Image (cartoon, rainbow, N blue to C red; front, side):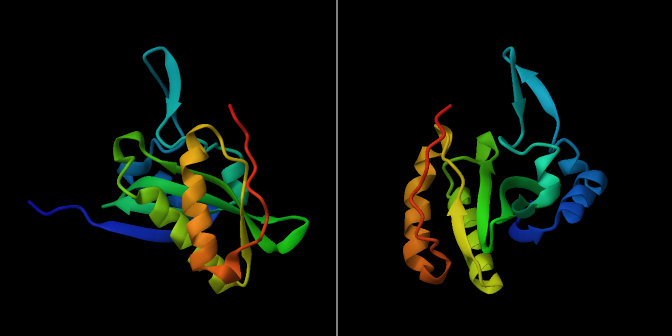
Length: 153
């Protein structure tokens, strides 16, 4: 049996949409389902409307997108990428995939001549702060110098 391979990709909104349209393993990417009486999505924070303005950094296991990070150019500073969300499928958490997404975001920002500013951190996202801090050190050209903000919900 061949083990599925991990792959990173930078996708425009139209490319992400095309993957959800054509790949069976990604057709449920934006769908909400009820689990134990709660509405859940495969990838938290990925919403059907805002993603159309975003560039997505995806991590796939085989063809299935298992982690994603969203980027938008700051409308007030086109030299800055806002990281709108980073999400890893529940069953793949704790494997370093969020770090891989964030590292790819920083590398892409350097390539594009931009700095990175994470959006506010949710309760779940608090554990990502040290990763962003390490990436600010590893990629000084992409460090915005902005203080991290919290959005505790």
